[in-house]
Image 1: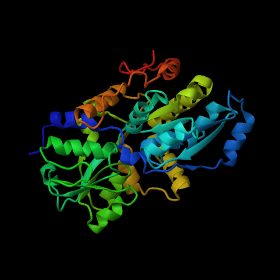
Image 2: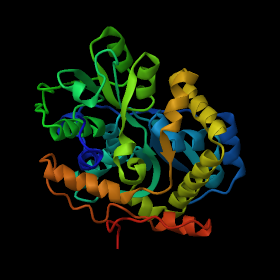
Image 3: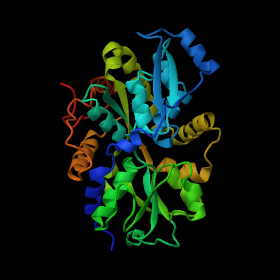
Image 4: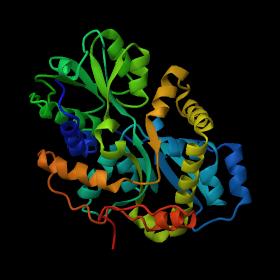
Length: 370
């Protein structure tokens, strides 16, 4: 029988956003910079410049980064920035975005909790702050229904995760452990074969029979379902209130200190974008898809984007308590030395904006700067 919901909830809470392992840190290069269109240049020319000429924002071409996709596509960030020019760069993995932040190639980033924790601890709390939330959910276990009908049937099968030690990989490893099964984390061999596969090629691996399922974020999960896979488990159902952080906003501490006006402008753009997305889900979905087409050369078909979009919750709240739980359970699992995460959050700019908008303040779970 499947493990009880409460047990699964604890297991996923333990690791859903663990830091990437050292192997993953060295595997990725920097992202690619997007070009400015004429409309954006016109906005820059007509607005009042803030304390810098340009702000550089990084994000993934991924639906869990919908705030960045839509905010850029609709010009909502640029409207708040006025004469300060927005430049964007896209990344395929968190470590490369952290490297870019550390190298002063970007100033602000939309990124997952794992690399946020990893970057902060490796720099001994000197390189970044989390300044806001962006998204929750959007991670599923999808399987070949001919081979896997229940959670217990996962034993003995080949299940893909995106990368050794990434958020979903460690979550799946811990879930396996909670089931009482044994797997060597490094090799992925054991009672379940964990196959590390780039999300871009996971559908091909599924079609060829090289894997029997995958524990992956959207839209990869919905792409697999479109190929005939079945959703077996939605990770959000394993969390209290069905919410856990999947994307938050980070900023270079140096940039935050030197250019608080620019940081506030970006956060205002984020809050307004999130409000627009939640008020106009269909228009926002189309906008995100248009942004993906611009960045990747093709949009997602309806059978993929429709279910994927529904599984992601857009939020200003960074859900700090879930990040703290994830980190502490990572320590318990022996995958992370006990970190000092105090100071990883600075939610003062966000809460100033939320207060002005008549919204409740976000909580830093005791991990904010003094």
